[in-house]
Length: 254
Image (cartoon, rainbow, N blue to C red):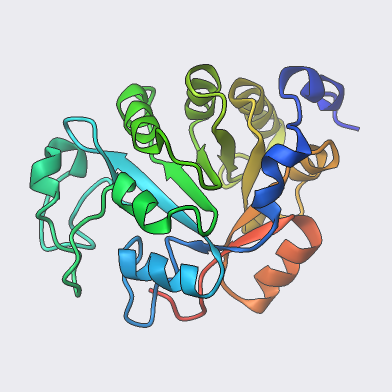
């Protein structure tokens, strides 16, 4: 048994099962049901996921003036005709940025939430690679004010879940984990301390790391474990055996 196992329940208690039941009721389309002509994190990709009854995962960054936009990268270069960092532009400028290969502009998070209108669960990955988390956390919380559909935030940064636990405890929160480059005793200690800091309601785990004693330990004591990114039958089998639900992409997605 891990020396940390008995401390986990004290420092990172498991949630009420009813609070997280929606997380394990269906798979989640990663960045919407994109590929095959649909761009990731586009409203069209989210519409496709809704039409097929899937949950959805999206990514958010904050504009310079604190508005949450649905977009994966910190830079605009890969998926738009623009250059530079998303966070260096105000919301009104970002509203005019078009996703490459579409007629869609970058969606605001509140626009996506209005589009979903509670019809399917949404996972929101909060992009916060540094300790400067307040702008993106406030932007995300502001977009979620008044929303009544099943929704959860999650992040690789444990400070994000800790912030939501203090400032918006009603919102389900997750901790995203990869063990890549973090092996051995040091990696185990870092993951455990991050877990205790985040105090999440669930884990979103790198499928390449499953099976994992860390994930199994959390799952055994009542934290749902979702796994990303499931792209083929082999990964699907791993997810079925070692997680509660998958965050997936269609084979051939780009």
